[in-house]
Image (cartoon, rainbow, N blue to C red; front, side, top):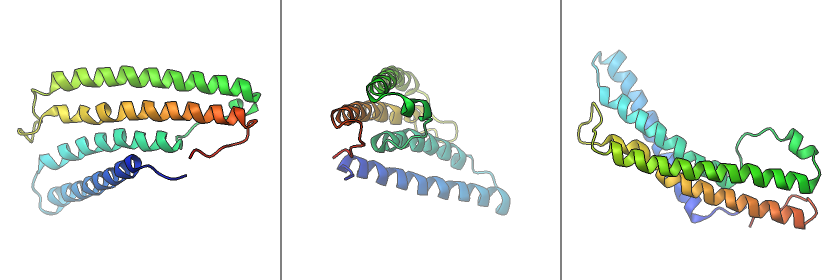
Length: 163
């Protein structure tokens, strides 16, 4: 399956965030146990980057449809019934993403005036930026999965690779 430019960009961003996150944690350990000084901003930035990594990573997981799922019961159902259940599951997931997106926008607006404790020039609203970016993209990929389910039904239940 060929990856889109959006997914390649998101994977690059995720890799960058991960490298910075690991570097900050190593710095934190060094400062705390080797240098015997407290540098609280490393912990706070690592926490923010972890949140970014999780919510940006969800986009990749849904785009490639590689999330952990238990599909034993679904796979035992007839193809058409499985298709109906898959649509219901994805529709509920899309509804959740819409609600999550709206809530994230509200929280972003409300928390933007508050600053991070150890970094007073960065708003605590940065925590809510990845869900605002990620939720619509996740919903988009869930819709694409429904289209792919439809291809499977048309092709008699055989697995069809999305192009």
